[in-house]
Image 1 (cartoon, helix red, strand yellow):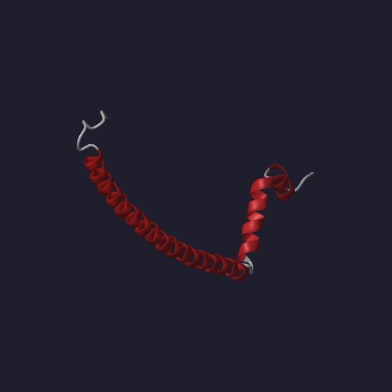
Image 2 (cartoon, one colour):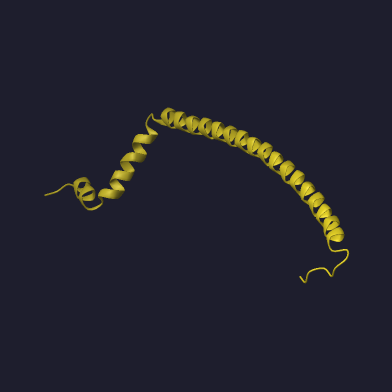
Length: 99
């Protein structure tokens, strides 16, 4: 005849295993758990610092790109102005070409 505990363990293996884990965790591993939590917090802090550094570097790169685009836009505006002047001189005596 099976004992009550053996019967319980045989028919409820998953809850029994979970109960065993809970009992194990409560009997002296709280220091280990705190160490793991501390390690996770340290890792999060380091990752956040790295992400902030990457964001700052990307921001500086974006500033450089914006400045170059602004410079290119200014140069394009000057070229368009010159082209308009050249077209006026070129087509002064004739009808301008159809668009």
